Structure formats: structure tokens, C-alpha cells
Amino acid sequence: MFHRLSVAAIFAAVVMACPVRADLTASLSKGSVELKSPGPMTFGPDNVLFVGDVGSATIFAIGTGDQATGDRKAALNIEKLDAKVAELLGGTSKEFAIRDMKVNPNTGNVFVSVARNAGGGAILRIDKAGKITEQALKDIPCARFTLSNPNKSERGRTQSITCLAFVKDRVFVAGLSNEEFASTLRSVPFPFKESDQHTPVEIYHGAHGKWETAAPVRTFMAFEINGQAHLLAAYTCTPLVKFPVENLKKGEKIRGITVAELGNGN
Image (cartoon, rainbow, N blue to C red; front, top):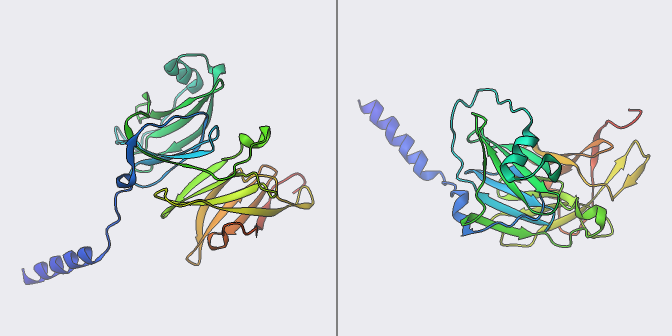
């Protein structure tokens, strides 16, 4: 009995000594999210969904209140998703574009960002039973952050946000800026209280045989090398490049390290 009580006491002491991470939704305020053209998404802890709205160059944090239902291990197969989305939102599939799809790691539910060609859009939730519902965007816990100096050209505007990732206490954003070196990686502290740190990036395109600064990162993922955070980025044509997170500093251009070249002839 003494042994059991001692173990329990030690465990309780360790738990009390370890810092408890605050619920991410505690930093959100009740409000409404107005989407002009929703695009890339990523999940943070506590069912908080980050949505990149390319129409307004704004990152929204949404407290989804998502809950798990059904068997998380069950396969999810939905036929003619575009038609079902259009029916739910009122229109035809030609009037909408599915921009991104992410799984909530806490619940297994799938979230889809849908942009209306005429402007506006929605975030949809698909549960494990295949039921599609619209995520509430009014009177919900939320926060927003508008990117500094986004690309305003006709081509660049739609690529001002190409990918998002939440790593520890920061949202990392890839896309095009309005700087001379347009390709940019941004680090945005969360909660959204400080300005974003935008870092111009330069990479070598083996398929083009030259250094380039105008091609945006198409997608990326975070990983660690010897305990140091890195981003592994993929480009359309088509090197894989790694960037040490500690080198992403505001206004300082960084040169990526190509680890694979998947372009034409490679």
C-alpha cells in the first residue's frame, strides 16, 4: 500500500510541476468570419482550424468545436463530392471550387474549404458517416491576421497564400508577396498580436538551370533534424527544398537547400 501511495504521490508531483498548455481557444474572441475566397487550411491543437483566405490575404483562426462521431478507423468514401457540395450550398458544381481538404487529427473528421467563383465561400465538415455540414462562421470563437504586403498582381493575388502549417506557437505561411523577391515564407506568432516575419526565399530550379525567387512554395511540411525545426517545401516544377526555421528572419533573404529534384529529365 505504501508503495502504491508513493508512486501516486510522485506522479501527482510531476504533473503539478509540468507546465500545462493553455487551451488554444482561450485566445480567441467571439465574432464572425467573412471569407472572400478560402484556400489552404491547417489544424492546430484543440480543434482550432486555420484558414487562409486568398481573397483578403488574411489568416483566420476558427474554434470549430468539432467532436468525434462514429468509428475513426472506418474508411470514408464519398462519390461525387463536388455535386454534393454544390447542392448543400445552393448552386451547380461549376460555380464552386474545392480548394483544400484537411483531417482534424483529434476527431478524424474531414474539413473542406470551398470557394465560390463569384466570391465568398464556406468551410464544410464531413463526419465519419459521410454526413456533410457547413461549419458555422458567425458568432464563433475566432481571430484574424492580415498579411503584410501581399502580392497584388492578377496572378500573384491568388497565390498570396499557398500553404499553411501550425508549429508550436506559430503559423507558417507560404505564398507570394509584393517584394522584389516575391517567393516568401512567413512566420506569424499565435495568438495574433505581432506583425508577421516575412522572409524572401531563393531556390535553385534544376529543371530551369537557374536560381529563382518568383516561384511560390506550393506545399510544405514541418519536421526536425537533430532537434532543430525545418520546413520541407515542394515547388510546382519540382524541387524539394529544406529551410531551417531558425533562419527565417524578417526581411533577410534565405537560400533553400535542395534535397531532391523531381522535374523534367530528373
